Image (cartoon, rainbow, N blue to C red; front, side):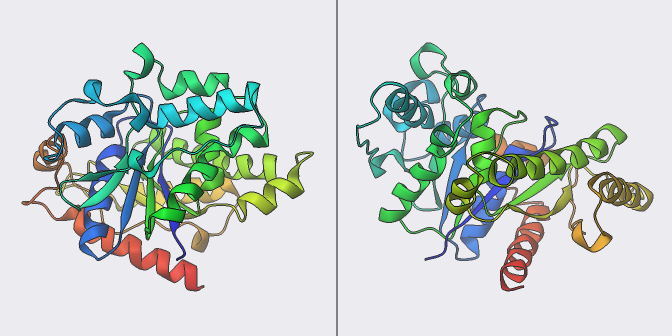
Length: 304
C-alpha cells in the first residue's frame, strides 16, 4: 500500500496547526482513510489533548509510559548511532495508540520524558548527517511493515531543527495554515523556501546527495495554503491576493504553482473548545469541507 506522509507546518505559532491536524485526522477517517498521527512539537500540545481525552486511557500525558513516546524512539536511535552502531534496534508497534476506539491511531511525544527531555533537546544531540536525518523515516518504515495506513499526518513544530528537517525529507506532501496579516504572509513564503532549501541542501548539493536522494525520494510537494481565524463579515479578497503575489514573488514561482484553498477556517469559539476536548466541532463544519478538498487535491496531484 502506498502510504502518503503529510506534514502540517508554519514557523509562526498560533495559526492552528494542532487544531488542523486533529481535524484532518478525524475527517480523513470519516472519509474512509486509515490515519496515523505523529506529534513532533516539543510542547506536545496535540499529545496532551489526545492522551487526556482518550476514553481508552485514564490518565494524563505525564502518566504515559516513556517507551510509548517519540522521544524514546529518537533517544534510542541517537544513542545507537553515537556509540553502538552495530545494534539492530526495533521499537515495537505497541508504541502506536488508538484514539477513541478506532477513530485514528497516534504516537505521542512528551515534554515529561526523562524529567523534561523534549524533542527539541534531543534534536540538539543529533548531528547533521544522513544517519540522524533518517531516524524518523526508518521508524515510519518499520511501523508501516506491520500496520496499514493511507496517511501519516505530522504536526510539525515552529522550528528548524534536525528533527523538523527529517520530517521535511520523510514527507510526500505538506500544507500550511496561516492567518492573514503581513507578518504571517511573509512567514508563509519563508517557510516554503526553507522546505525547498532543506531538500536541495541534502539531496542535491551535499556530498552524499546521491544516497540522500535515493533514500528520501522526491521533495515534498505543497498541497496548498489555507487561512485560519477568519471573520465571516470581513472581505479578505485583497489580503488573499497579496498573500499569493507575495509567495509567488519571493519563491520565484508561477501563480498556478501556489494553491490557496477557498475553504477557510473561521474564528469560531466552538472549534477551539472542541479541540480542547479532543473532538471536532459539531456546530461548525469548516474543517469538514477543507478536509475533503485536501484529499481531492492530493489525489489530483498524485495522479498528475
